[in-house]
Amino acid sequence: MDLLDDSPGSGNAHEYTVSEISGAVKRVIEGEFGRVRVRGEVGRVSRPSSGHMYFDLKDASAVIAAVSWKGQVARMQIRPEEGMEVIAAGRMTTFPGQSKYQLIVDDVEPAGAGALMAMLEARRRALAAEGLFDEHRKKPLPWLPGVIGVVTSPSGAVIRDILHRLRDRFPRRVLIWPVAVQGQACAPEVAAAIRGFNALPEGGAIPRPDLIIVARGGGSLEDLWGFNEEAVVRAAATSRIPLISAVGHETDTTLIDFAADRRAPTPTAAAEIAVPVRADLATWLAETEARMARAARGRVEGHGQRLRDLSRALGRPETLIAPARQRFDLMSDRLAPALRMVTVRKRAGFAPLEARIAPAILRRYLAQEGRRLETLAARLAPALARTRLEAERANTRNRATLEGLSDRLARAPQARLAALAERLDRLDRMRQTLGYRETLKRGYAVVRTGETLVTRAAEAAAAATLEIEFHDGRVPAHPGEGSAPAPGPVAPTPRRRARKDEPPEQGSLF
Image 1 (tube, rainbow, N blue to C red):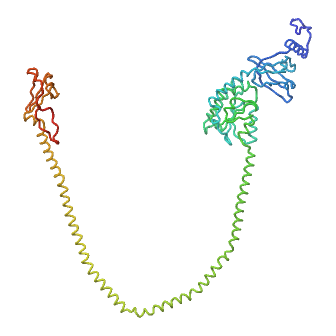
Image 2: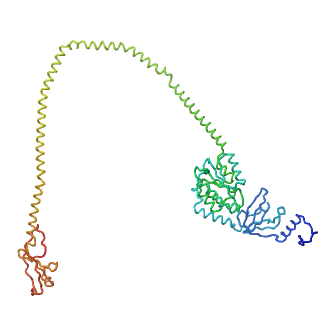
Image 3: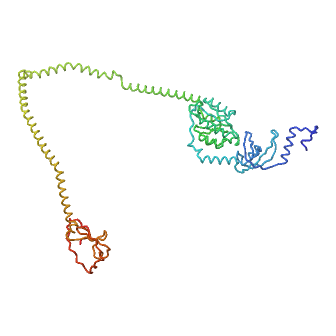
């Protein structure tokens, strides 16, 4: 059946309805392919509350929509997940409601990890090996940041959710750095935004954020791929400002989540992590203030009650001082008679002495003591004179002794030097007397060949030249000019026996 009439003059061509065309296309596709097995990478997976499963099968250049009904999903042993490479078995059909063809999948077999997931895992391992994901690199978040920087798209619902959540919890100043959240421009713009916030100076015209939130809504792996780029991960890891990653939904995971200081499951959750609830803080502060007031009041009341209890145990002050006051009154009453009685007793005891202590007796006593003092003074002067004289004599003797010792000390070095000089002269004369030159004057001689002494006749006969030293000079000799010495023993030349203190002679004497 011809569906379309390409002839230009077909003014009476049959008019098909949309349903007729869609049904014809469906019959062609189902009749041509029937049941097929398709190998591809699983794209975005959707599981609505109905229990059906919708996902994409893709390769480098094409995408096929796939669907599995609730009963088929229940029978699957392996359920497709995003990034898996699978072999899906099913039948091709169309969906007229959206003018697209799709694959009804009733069975899925794993065929290995998808190319994107494999590349993502390799990149994650490489960056983890550099230590970019280590826990010790992560910085604590500020408890109440004054300025929050948000890196996201300004036109999406994400920024509105964040601002609405911050306004409900604790309004803060928000700086928005607009970026592309998917596509080729996503990674460089996000990395530049993170570095730009960190480059803002402290106290500048634009306030430097105390916290950065990188946010994006959910999407497929391809949509979120910009947040897996190495530039974004390195910018997040090297950020000096604490950073919260809020990319995708709770099940979405990107590499920036590992490098960030904190990961939030959703952008709204990031706003909740960033600031506390002001109403809760106010309530907590009021409760704490009330508890503090109650504690202080209870403490004061407790101490007051304790003081009152102790005061009851001590008794009334009047009761405590009443015995002492009574004793004081008794003593004061007895004091005046006691003083009068003591005065009378002392006066009675002084009466016998009054007759003995007359003025004449006192004058005689004073005169007697004056004479005794004059006698002692007369004896004191000669004693002082004798003591002074003995001291002067001792000083004179000590001075004479010191002068004698000083003279001896002055003469001792000269005498010692004179004795040593005389001994040195004696030793020099002895050296000259006992030296070998004095021996030469007595008729001896020294025979040398060069600088070597000749002590035997055989050495003299073998020498080329000889030199004989007398006391008045040296004379060369030639052994070959004379006759050789007769063989046989030679009578030793008598020598004088050296004394023990005589220095050794120099050279051989003959």
